[in-house]
Image (cartoon, rainbow, N blue to C red; front, side, top):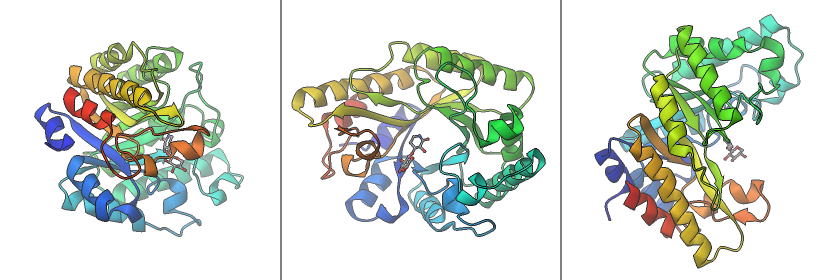
Length: 312
Ligand code: XIL
């Protein structure tokens, strides 16, 4: 079978997967390297991973993933610079003035983006800034710095690597709804103000049978705004145990998402959040749900894999 990355390339798309550095060997490494044209570190580039103690950095896993990608002719999507989760304890437990917080954030972004300058195709600069109703999420950053943290983070990232495409990434923004409209309005305003913003990431952690009917329309409205779109964290979870009917529905769901991306020129990347069920975050996070990825726990392709291939 033609690898997914070659099918995607023929359509002008890049297909990616989230990965864990320590697993990039054996069958996992073979599939990650051969089937995908883009890698996203699942955790390795998050602040708690790279600076576990203040001023003490650990780039081991991030470096490993970037090196693997280079060796396999793959892009890297950097994930993620500014988030309310997976920050180091020293940061979240500290009490900081606004000025201190701004300096910490600027230093973090400059250090991490600068380290990988020229080697990251796209950064998820800001992750999950919105609540479901479209208001801004309260977080360390919002509480301390107000909404300015978003524009400032993008500006700092751009200064550290002017060639990297800069994204805002969120979940439940796949269809047209209050949250995706808030993201749309933010991107519009950033562009009007000349803030460097290149794309939006639609995470797409979906539930079986629930691909939003407005997915393609939503991708298109962002494209029409003048930004790229990436499906950044696709998975389709089902109530366990899986059966053939559920796997068929899941294949239809993967096909619908892939087709929506293929239909819009500016949808540039489609990334799955782990490619095999044994490596997915879903079972640990959504009790009773799983089987969310295109390969089963033995790395055999599922109907969803063939559905992606058909839609590409
Ligand atoms: C998840 C990882 O996959 C898990 O290993 C980790 O324990 C928690 O974070 N949205 C995101 C990702 O932007 O960073 C999250 O990744 C999944 C939800």
